[in-house]
Length: 307
Ligand code: SF4
Image 1 (cartoon, rainbow, N blue to C red):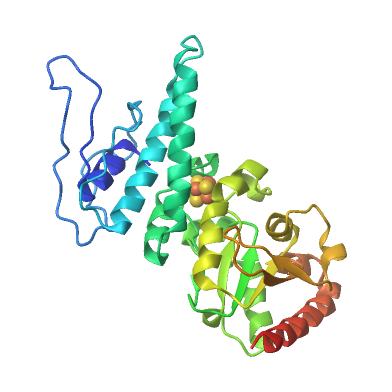
Image 2 (image 1 turned 180 degrees about the vertical axis):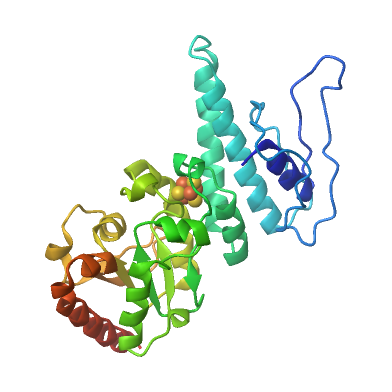
């Protein structure tokens, strides 16, 4: 998040922001709070969006007394973001400061994780839209939160946004997405009747696979989406999705046709998970589409068993 957006975002939540001391200015500055339409809608930007954020003191954003749950959640995200920036800004020479900064960042990250676990759909979407938890934020055009029915029985999980998704902010809108739509139609489902998400919400450059640390940084968002959705069945589209959700490194060919379960981190009941090829595989290898049809049949069967 650039500095101007961060300040207005915090201001919209009623958070006082402490600025580094500058000659001729008061050390403490309070950002004038604009009139947001709601706690989750940041006010319009007033400053240069390309301005580089200045290093901030750790944990300078103070929670507002009486903040709502959504505001508290967003405040925690802001504090964790500041703590990470502070840790990154600690010079190697000041080694005595590094452990304290690392400890502050770790505490903030734990706080952030706890807050994500308590978010509702809209708060979660707002946090993802502003997320800078991993380097993919530097190259994305739009975050791709997920789309579909938030009460769907069926959750499809891909690996990450491609170029079209990055531009439009919606998963599976390119050629692979169009094929997925046709596959869903083949079993009598519209795209709007299922939920579609990805392992990471920002596009990896050149469509590479997400790095483990990127997937790990983004995982709390998907975990929260799954907890909110409570799907009857998860369908992993491709190896990256399956490997991340099942915690293995197997190839799709070895996982297809077998029973799997996704174990939610909160100890909730395991959710059946079916592994199939990513639609882009069928675009590259049309002769393999029969396997996709077999998997669609299994999806119908598994859903019926869960009803
Ligand atoms: S990929 Fe996920 S963790 Fe990384 S910046 Fe995007 S939303 Fe945040």
